[in-house]
Amino acid sequence: MIVYLNGKFLPLSEARVSVLDRGFIFADGVYEVIPVYGGRLFRLQEHLQRLENSLAAIKLHNPLTQQQWIETLESLVAQRDDQSDQSVYLQITRGPAKRDHNFPEQVKPTVFIMSEPLQPKPPSSGVKAITRPDMRWQRCDIKSIALLANVLQRREAIEMGAAEAILIRDGYIMEGAASNVFIVVDGVAITPPKSQLILPGITRDLILEAMQAAQLPCREADIPESQLRSASEIWITSSTREILPVIMLDDKQVGSGKPGTVWSQVFQIYQDYKLKLRTHD
Ligand code: PDD
Image (cartoon, rainbow, N blue to C red; front, side):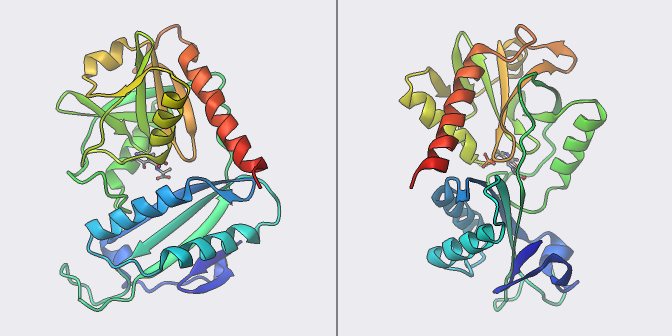
């Protein structure tokens, strides 16, 4: 596998970073995950904008220009000669420095990019989810590589035979450990509004945009825990999992216990979007 590290394309086995890298020592860095369909980076501008926002929030200068990002990402994607779907992972850390919580003014950020095959689990039968108190920090809008809380909460879900942990803060639904959440109430899809307590998901935004274009009812609103528990549908959404219907929540059936009718409409719209991207010149 060919990866990109600090200006060079090289085999993964040859990619090396310093053990003093602040990413390794402090998780001092940010990342993005971008899906690639038919060789094309999906919603690239939106991902690069979110990256810019994350970098600004951690006071790290973007080491590449927009144009350099596009060229570098496209070159890496082209390394895989098949047209299979890919998931690009990119990470920028504050780079190597003497260990000190305070960071030096002059740093050389580490930029790492890799691409892996993307195979979302077929969602036809739906998945289980559990709920957990949100134990993360107050800036979940930053796509930070410091993910220990998310890692532990996803692990708990897997140990319970579930695909995701839905996080609850002060009685309200935030998002999944690595996904956004939608519910359906009386035929209306609802997702929590953007704030510093959730990641502004690119898939989430696309779903809202596509539903509005198709005149399907949807809105952004706070979701109390009781509303999650009585919803007729629950979905989790992300770049790698697309739109997954949740059919069991904490061992209680969601709606009919099968993927819902609103989900199947939105899922189809999403697939059409991907197809358009694949066939578009
Ligand atoms: N995670 N919320 C969190 C906490 C996430 O980690 C993710 C995605 C999302 C969905 O965002 P998007 O639709 O832009 O993928 C929401 C990625 C896929 C990951 O960490 O692998």
